[in-house]
Length: 394
Image (cartoon, rainbow, N blue to C red):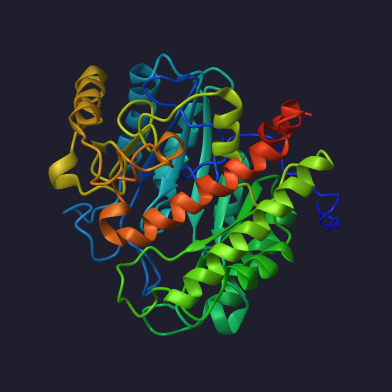
């Protein structure tokens, strides 16, 4: 099956839930919102076959264990989520890591178990570096009809400058081959994902991603502390924010023509404004969204350090980690300065995993996204139903 590349103006993203955080998803669930959809970030392994210098996971104490998740635990996880999230109509298992495709037995175990559940009860997503070309990979991705978030920063000279193997070998050619194979052998929805860092702008990355055969694109600033060699400088941040305004203009144009934008980073917040609700938290971590580490530790989010945020184990009675999640949410306090921020109703107080790492840079980026979302919403104030296309409703 070979897909013909359609012009950007005619390509429509497949309606559905985009996993992986608030920048690209639909309206997130929370303590005061519909729990119909739950997302669980599952790290089947912390191992990775690349050594990306800007990696958000590597070097953090996300887990003291390096063992891979066993197929038996993977099957148990499906049963535990099915029992523990009865109020969710759909549960998305989003495989993360590490590189999740280094643990195919666990993925197969999950897929086999979900076949025993009612149709539509489980969906699958995966964030991958796209360097593993084993035929079994594409068999499993097609079997689960995965939504694939594929890391591909830019052309080879950009991508390979940071995304190399431990032996220093380039990987761009592997990722582009992975994408071609994925498109020819599966019906998976694909999101091209690029990291913006010093020397590589949002405008350049978006231009590159829009030329790929992907359904949606995601290009965001690197998550590193200020002073890191990859961190954006002051002028680069100014250019980043200016291009966010241009992305907002493109969203307005797409909605005017009844198209779902390929860059949907503002969709969640625009739909939130349309619904007229206020975020009480940045995301639904600890309520309808959770994380699970390779050894089965349950966290509010898999990107949080396990030592101080563990809610229990996936083999515990589900009410154990559900009640611990509610207590974790209740015990959170707003970040300094949040109470007086005009973006708070759309932000919810900052990501508990990323904000401590990136500090003010992350805060300013989220605030700008909220500002652009308001502008998009206000543009359609006289015909708000036009915005329903952002939720796949035409």
